[in-house]
Each structure stands twice: as C-alpha cells, then as structure tokens.
Image (cartoon, rainbow, N blue to C red; front, top):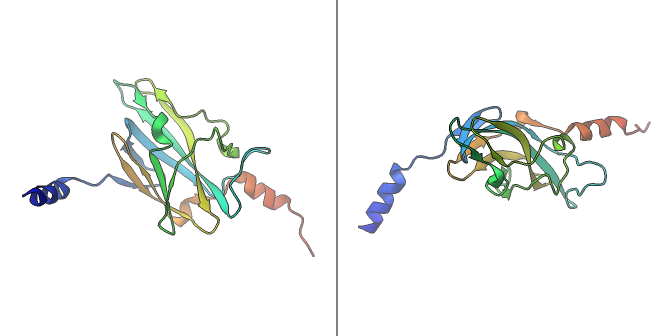
Amino acid sequence: MLLAVTLLAAACSSPPPVGQVGSTLSALSGTVTFDKVLSPAPVEHGSLGAPYGHKLVAVVLTVHSTTGSSGKFGAIYHNSKLIDSKKLGHIGRSTAKYNVAECVSYPPFATLGSGQSATGCVVFILTTAATPVELKISGKSSADWTIAASAVQPGTAALSARLRRPRCL
C-alpha cells in the first residue's frame, strides 16, 4: 500500500519548469532571470582563482521579488547547482570569495523588498575540460535551465588578455 501511495505521489508531482539562458522562471521566493553564463570567468588581479586544472564559471542572474512580499535570495548560492558536460553537479559560490572581473559591480544576493529586483553572479568551479549544460535552483520554488553551447560566453577579461598576448612568428 505504501509503495502504491509513493508511486502515485511521484506521478502527480510536476517537475520544475525548464527554461534557457535569457528566460525567467519562478525560483526561491520570487522569479529568477538567467541573464548569461561566462566560461571561463576571469578574476580581478590579486583575487583567488580556480585551482590548477579547473576554471571558474559565473552565471549572471537577476532576481525579482513578488509584488506584495519581500524575497529572500541570500540562499541562492548554496541552492544553485551547475551541471557540466560530464554530468557532474557543482554547488554555487559567492563572489565574496571569487572576485570575478565582470561581477565586481554587483552586490551579493540578499533579501529584496516587495517588487524589487537585483542582478548578481553565482560562481562555480569546473574542470577545465568540462562545459556548463544546465543550471538548477532549488528552494521554496525550483527551476531548471538548459545551457546551449552557443549561450556560453568567455569573460571579457579573458578575451582581452588573449588579444594582448604577443604573437610568435
């Protein structure tokens, strides 16, 4: 009997909504827009970078609290998981530890007043050979975004460093 109830409950529960980079979904205590993904995500000079054989990947998100209530988004870091091309999950980290160059102007995620929004970054550590393919956010409301290879952008600091590198003839 218990097995039948468990199977029925599983069949009746709906999976979280699925979006792509650029879409807005309900997540945590409001909505989240997945603005872009940067890989590799370079850090500011003198900041802690990725360990050897790894790279930082930053996802830029805009969180929106609902009209009528505040939204708690400080937990977004440990409630975010980036799935890579090797099917490994990586838990999000704050930009307080990893000062990603393109994220330094954004404040850390926190509680927002009714109807407010804020943009920020969540940082992940992946092996150098892996690519991001999916972002999942769990919590009061959960969401899931797929990441097309064409949506992954290199960080501009990494791009400008490549452009400054002297060419050998």
